Every structure is written in structure tokens, then in C-alpha cells.
Length: 192
Ligand code: GLN
Image 1 (cartoon, rainbow, N blue to C red):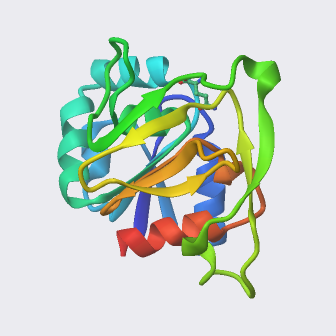
Image 2 (image 1 turned 90 degrees about the vertical axis):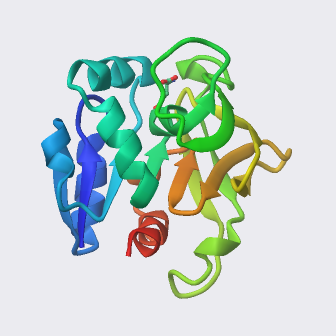
């Protein structure tokens, strides 16, 4: 399996290391031609405005939209913002998932936090079911899901922090910054 990581800005290297740890070939994607032959793509965390602007500059917006019609894409944090249909402000988006997102929903960088989440889809990975420790950095919230999108994880207060729509995945948090490979394994099962 060969997975691309959008490498315009943000923490793409951490995703690449995680994929390599799982024995998967990982390549950096900066130009449309880099999407050729990939089984899936990860859009990392960073600044969604910067990643979106660079995607426009490098002619990647439409190729990424087309790729997402037929291939697995996972957006973490800023990546989740890019996958969404609506964020209540003008900014380049891929508009692939039927989710609305609010950026910086928890406040500023100092309000970053960690939380244990119960995600049943991850139970089949790892030795026994255990909570998923999630890292939120100036994170967005998924306000609502519609169409065929469904909620994958919420905070204890019910706010949505992960959603899935077929082979498309969005998480408010950063699995690439943990030691826990289960979310990457879950994404690989969608890309397979
Ligand atoms: N606050 C960033 C944005 O709105 C996302 C932060 C992140 O990816 N950790 O794009």
C-alpha cells in the first residue's frame, strides 16, 4: 500500500513516520502528479488557511477533490477543516464531506488540551479495547454531520470530534502526535 501525505505545511512528517512504523510506503504530496498511484491521502494539521492557499497556488484543489471521489482521504485538525463543506467563512475548501466545522472552537493555542475518547471502531486494533488518548491543538469542532456522514467520536459533553463518510475521515485531534497507531490502522483499513 502507498499512502500520500499532503506536505504543503503543517506536521506531515509525523504522519509519514507513523505510516512507516506500520510498514506502509509513505510519500510527500506537493504537486498533482504526486497523487498518481496512491491508495489514500492524509491531510495533516497545521493552518488550514495556509494549506488551502498553497493548494490553490500549486493547482491541487481540483485534483484533490477528484482523488477524494474514489480514494480514502483523512484530514487531521486543519485537514478536517479542508475536507468540510462549510466553515462559515470564505476560505479554500475541498468540500468533500457533509460536515460543518467551526475553526478554533476551543479558543487559542493556550487552550489546547488532551482527552480520552471512547471510539468503538478502534476496538479491533490493539490487544484489548481501551480509550483513545486524543491531543487537541487549537482544534476545530465538527458542528454537524449530514447526508451519509456519521459521527465517529465525541467529547464527554457530546461535541463531535471525529466523523466518517465512506472512505473519508475527519478528526479534530492529532493521532500522529501520539504513540498510538490505532487511528492510522483504521484509516489504512479504509484505503485498502
Ligand atoms: N487552528 C488551525 C486552523 O484553523 C488548525 C490547528 C491544527 O491543525 N492543529 O487551521
